[in-house]
View 1 (cartoon, rainbow, N blue to C red):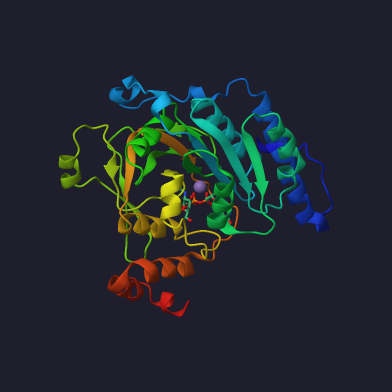
View 2: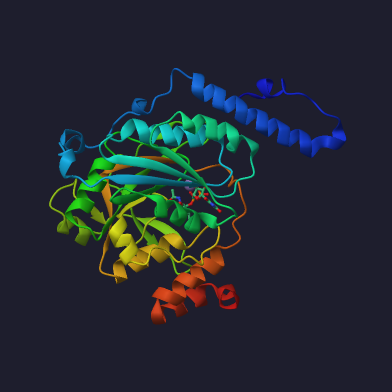
Length: 335
Ligand code: UD2
Ligand code: MN
């Protein structure tokens, strides 16, 4: 929406500035849903499939693949991005593999996410909406969604994603072969402003971390290149970014799921990564599976719990190595 269009909104006297901003935001959101619904241009299948040719030519026997439930937790997300995510999953996932999409509203307070969203969802098959009764944070919100899931595999996505066709099959196939493999797609970047999709066409990056337990991307090491037989084999990754992954429901339960004491945002991605590798599983990125993620200009909520969450991960999984964490991050000793 342009600023010219915004000026069509009703204006208020100066002392109601906050109210005005809020009303405009609501209107913009209402407007966004209209744009979305009426935009004949937009379709998930429009994203150019620039994956490797081996990925595109691969044929899957759907009857042999496990099914999945896609779980999307959200807090105060813009309607337009949330709807794009839902439609993208519906359009790009083979119907026999997708049991359902479970949306978990983590106690959002935006008005447009109430009945307007409910009405919209009610016309969609296989999309369920669950609401938490208090703000749970992304970990517990995802877990609440997982308790309702009927698919064999839980696939978690952020609420501002767009999937590239063919994203789901490689993840499910690999988990079908090896139940203890936790799979991530390659995360492509979607421009928050123009919605342009930037597909990462080179060799994917793998996840690492620094001693403050901040997630980082790294090039695939030579040893891992040697281990793989082809360029479409999954790539082992020490850690995951956190938002986009698929895991067998049974294996996730065996792992003890997530640390439920983690609040709001941060740290759970490394905690789960350490958990997987230390409990006999593997964490892998599949080069044929691509999902775009909108990295917003500014987070729509405060994130005060990162330090506390990472300290929990260090205490539980790092044994003596946790000293490196505390030395690099002295305030963590106090939380
Ligand atoms: C990254 C991950 C994100 C999560 C985070 C660390 C990707 C692409 N994203 O940050 O999934 O692992 O690192 O914690 O790997 N949400 C709630 N309740 C809350 C807060 C967030 O439901 O209290 C939802 C939110 O609406 C979104 C998801 O959780 O769907 C992740 O949050 P984010 O998109 O703000 O995190 P992001 O992408 O910056
Ligand atoms: Mn996100």
